[in-house]
Image (cartoon, rainbow, N blue to C red; front, side):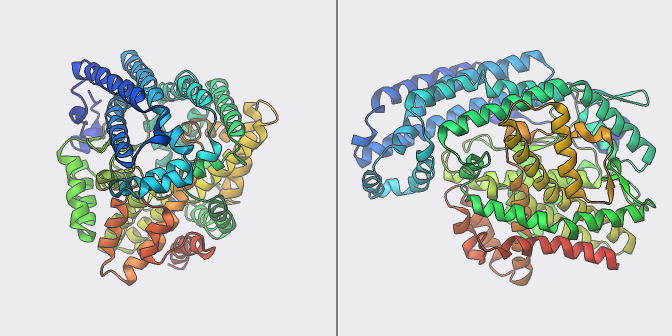
Length: 595
């Protein structure tokens, strides 16, 4: 049950999700029945096809891939259900056991299917062309091509099998330890016990004293766990280094780029463009903000402080829903209709509860079911942008589901497109309706801060990861060394307008992306710059844009980024591409400065 407080009461009734599209509950006998069925079918597929793929005819290959796709969907349904149950309450020991047990069983089944991708990657090019000449196999051509991109980095079958089998007691266990450690944190402020979401929310309090108090409390609590969090970080970085070297990746970020189906030089150009823009973006803005707050410099706990004249009003859940869906509908009634299902069919969990994972996500689950959105909704203006952001993901996941279990997932380079575009739609709608100059200034400042968090902050995170992964090759890193790197990178990105105190050194330790998905973070900056360019095209030439945009979302992972962007006349390989997107943020800062 959710915790009802005076604040949550003012937000209205916050939804809790219904996972019935997956299973009816942890005791649903269908869970074990599905596991047994999937295991039996996986064993049958292994028996019929292992070692034979290079000798198959086109029709046999089609049968294999369709069976494999069905198994991935059914297996994903079980795995997703356990993940969502666990995320809803990580403090419940039974949830943890349920999650771990199902992950172990799913990994065991996955090991029986591993031969499919391994053998596809060993096929001669001529055999692949022969397969793709079979008409019904053309549909799976993009998946086969993307699968084979990993061929140069593939290890022996035995090595791949061992890595998969041990992942559940290796990397996955360390990730689980991190999640449970962070979910179990509690903070005390003025006699009130807070979870992570509530504590970090106070960093946006209008009261400077409150911000300082909670910042120091957060630092103290994180410091109390820093040895464990440092051990987790060291272990996971070393684990990745060992595997990367075995596979032959040239840099720690290269494996992520390959999974994202984007070239190393394009990611490098994005990072370089953002770094070179720090002085025009974050450095300028935070100096302005310090002046507005009457300070020579902002303290780090002032970074997300509301500006003077901000009334700190709360937006109820129903108001947020109406605002988001209205903005979506103005752009595309199709998007609004898809988005409305999340509210009507209980696909969203927005309540704040002890043990619930902090932050927010949209879990795609599997194409045969539906995505689920997790939020910790607290009603502030930025909180409205969070369901908006995650709903963008959800709409994207619904639209791409027609690609099937093998090609529905979008590479991370484009995975943030729909979410950030959704934010842009809602922000522009809010800004156009606002006529009061002070409110417009506040909204513009809030949008700039969100964009800086999406672009500058995420690229600084990426640079932090790159430096840590480099340093770790020389030996285990102390929390002091990691903290020093964090301070150095943050000072460079935030600029001279923000004072970083010594107790800020531990703030790296709670960020989940470093643990869950190394180097994921640049995808946010990629998405923001891309969306800025897309929105500019939409404003200049609205006719026909909606259809092209929805076609891009429906494509899922069936096409590469350059193919998806071609209808819009965009090319991420063009050095000017990133600067065009960054100039939108710069223009917002100009408007504030001159306003």
